[in-house]
Image (tube, rainbow, N blue to C red; front, side):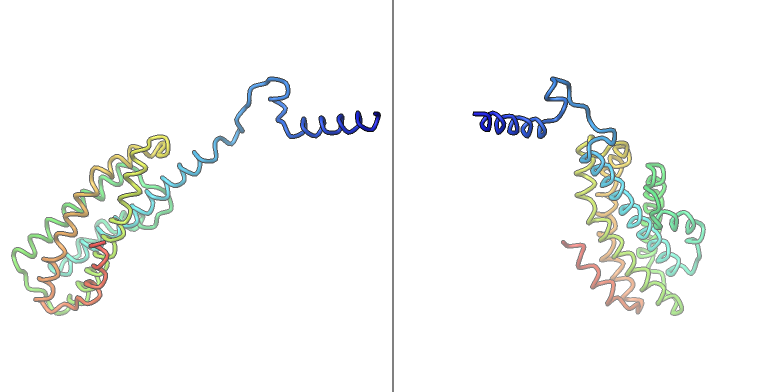
Length: 213
């Protein structure tokens, strides 16, 4: 009988040990000071997606400007190089204001490139290599930007996951589809124009396969 009572006592103590102290005494459960691990993970994901986007966009705008410089024999890219380099470095997530600046730069460069093609400007031989390299970078960066759209839209559609980044993400959702569509739409005309001017387009055309995926 004593052995049975002892076993029952040991069993009861074991069960109590597996139950949180709050539950044993009817106390409310208190969240950890570190917060919910899922929300932390979501916030980090939002920041990571923003950084990847700013890197892709900065590289795209740099390529647009470098291509425009190669066509026109100018060096306008230098004026924005420091800003774009900082964005492309990706040490910290860019602000909405930074993205507004990048998008504005892209629209301006896109208009200039469209004019270059429409005017059928003759490309100088010394700038053909630079134009080829810029076109490759243009396509690679555009494909990278396109690949991030679904992630951006998903985060923007879930304010709890986006956290303090919701304003930036919402802005990107409103701007990226048109920017990507414009960039992709210009690719064919740029390829045709550059090919006609004797620019090597093999690598750029290979990289462009990703635009259709």
